[in-house]
Length: 230
Ligand code: DX5
Ligand code: ZN
Image (cartoon, rainbow, N blue to C red; front, top):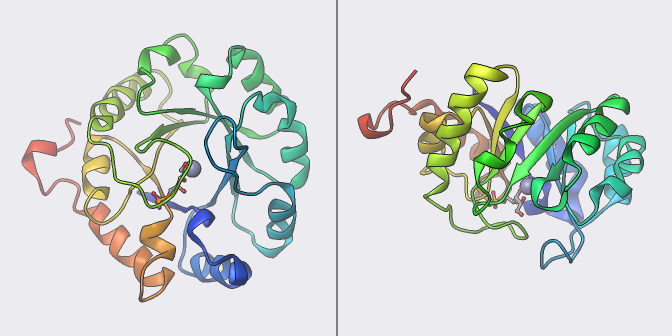
């Protein structure tokens, strides 16, 4: 079952409530909120006001993708503001074990994100701790970027490890996911697709964007070269 997590970064912020209702009624699994601090990534997006406004407006689980330095400073505040899943970047979490346990002590799902250049091996000792592993398939900071092809091998490696050691953990991918790349990442082992531009940027509206993405993801085995090995 492939799940879609629309990234609201690509939504029309003048009509954010309507955009969220449109994807909620189209049957997405969760909302992806890209929080950017202008230091870990060269962009600033949004924070607590958006999360607090969305929380009462949707029943969808909210996952916060924290693209910020020292994310541990704000975990409690994001939990209080209504986040269900807190995703921190491995690259800015030298005390990742402690951070993940803090998220769990708040009663939230704990996710870790890896930038394209960050090796899977850095999760070797902590893989069992996570509820979600997010593989960045673009360099974080912006929507509407091109998919980075070498991340497919990382997805395969993580899929193999999770199947063995933590099969309940979500394997989520993020960045440049559209009708062309969706079948490729699913064939490599991704099961949750974050999509901003291909959903909210579809000229026929988000429901149409979701339809074409879901149909494309279902074609995962079409290319024998990328057929899943399980
Ligand atoms: C990038 C964000 C992604 C991005 C996805 O730093 O983490 O979630 O918004 O947007 P698209 O799907 O447009 O690449
Ligand atoms: Zn994201």
